[in-house]
Length: 312
Image 1: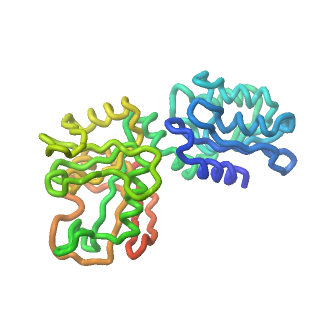
Image 2: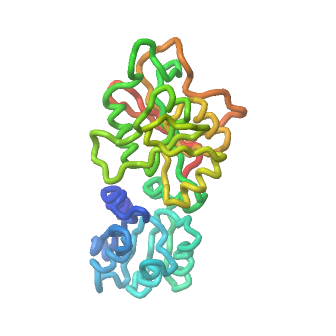
């Protein structure tokens, strides 16, 4: 239950520590929570340190539940692993390991100091910081392919402006607001002149708006043209701090990303409509692809299907 509490703290503070990951931590002594915390804004204390400070002397002999492996390096703050040992914690339950090679090793350091350490490898813990984890582990952004489609797999409906309903379209704007970058292909640019910004939803920062393909861009599009090979462009974006990319392009761009093995996650907004005509949401792919963590939920009158090609 205490790991669930730590996960809840991290969920409630999602994005608050950007561009760092958000980590929740709970200190339990004699069956009672004596301290809890979550990572502060960039440059501030990590969740473990906040929780230990709240627990003070009651941390000695207690159990620490933390959503991600405590760091073992000295960055903007000292190593959390050292602070945990110094506080007298006797047992640590870790939600997931740290994929950052510069910061990993906290579990080993704790065990060397004589602490009991359990690793849960919780999908929820990994999911909470999935963009950051991909950015650190693969040196590229997490790529999510989002598409609105009919039940027969079409991305247009004859005579209609929209494929999906208002609730789905609002959720797409929320997804944009939560992404570092949004991208389409040049075919979509020429056909739809998309804005790709987040509108009518709370926005901390607007995403970068990208177009993949051969230019030129139409005058006044406001998009960034990315013409190099896809992996090179993703590496360049990662070097510029882009951790998450929402791919909204048509089937040509989506198929190119999939064939290159560069899509991590699918979000399929399926409308209760049979189109009967128009392009399909995906082109021909050379081999089958196994998905994991498939889920479905209603969004207004539509259904959102979510699945992973590569888990975080």
